[in-house]
Length: 326
Image (cartoon, rainbow, N blue to C red; front, side, top):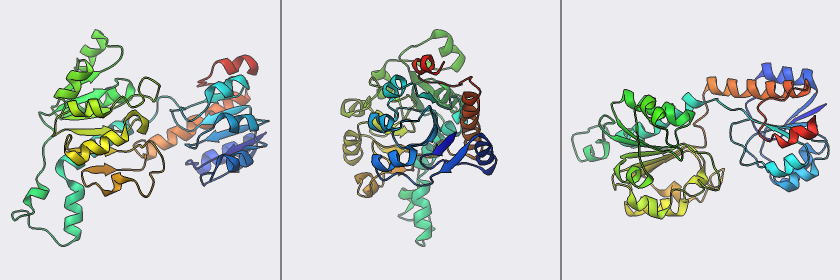
């Protein structure tokens, strides 16, 4: 049994050894430069552990021996599921991890932007310290208490964000495609329509998967409805936001700032116009990245492979493939 880690993941020694016990292991710690390179890496693999690099129909068609694709994360929108299912390739993921890590990261972004910590840090490194003179305006920020947080998506991460917001004594509004009065009461929020959410939120945070219905759900029209003092946080998927519209809104002052951990194209290109804006906080898709969440992610991924080899696949996202597997 040949197992290939096709692009970079965090593979601790404990889990590396477990995989070696299951089969012949090959680990690649760099991103493939192209689909052709990815195809070369996995051409003889029976099982592949996939990080963030996409698996197109062409790649999957070329993987003649591939029986299982273990996705080292929750999202699998970078995998051509239809092709995998047709070929009988079982695709597993890691549901239910990093909820706390991502939710806490949202507030790290928000507090940084509201209190202008990154600007204060840079000024101090340049020799500025006295806050009472002209630089006071650059340091002066805002508190979270009393602000209105708008949450789009009330799954596990969105719900945890709401819980934390209550600790800051924030008002919380939420939008979901399937509002539930029971959940509304449990979370202590007010479910509202999208327009109300956009118009009343001081901070808007996104927690939805990338689907045809959520792609570019925040575009020029939605950004125009937000307060000029509002902040947008995106730790979901880059494609959920129309980046061109967001750039325009940030430049014109239609919104005050944004915290972006995900982008339409990753890695973020070195010539991205976001890099030239001082009202945006940029991080390289690391909201999930805590010691605790990474350990859980790798542990579940390895367990998924173990269960598969035992004939009992777990966390399968393409149930159709199980018919061929059986």
